[in-house]
Length: 190
Image 1 (cartoon, helix red, strand yellow):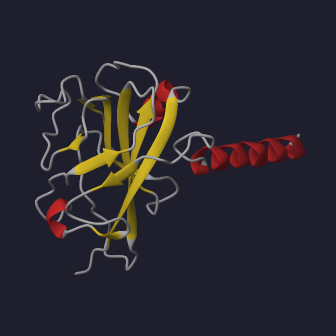
Image 2: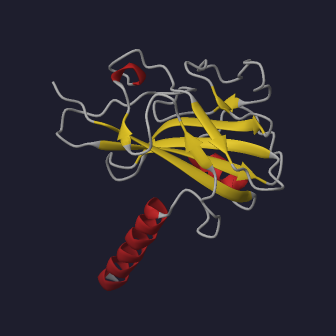
């Protein structure tokens, strides 16, 4: 019986590890969307103003090169360096296909009322609040990476408010046409 429990425990552990380490998009979805910001370039430092140690406002994010057939967009921002699974800093979904980006200092309200973003929802981040939560790594000497990933979807999901990362990934998993990534770095030093 102990051998069965041990084998089951190892299998469960491997299964959980695979689920945690799986990418947040289908492996066959091409990464063809170009994602950028005016306040930092890909794989450079995010200015303190956009961190939880600064003003904590969201940076502007823009995108180009959406694939044909895109009907809606979504965004997931997470920090894969934290703990045993990525810490979620921002979830946004139901983003209209007509939008070419998100403005700086976007409201953290669940229902976004910004012109051109009608219908967009800010989902639950890792603090269980809605909207953007800026980088706030501990003073551990590590450079933390923040992945702003845009998803082009072939369907208008029109999801209600309250979704978190896992629920959003589940809802859009068969609808992802392409993705794009903007990576920023942040290191807290005292």
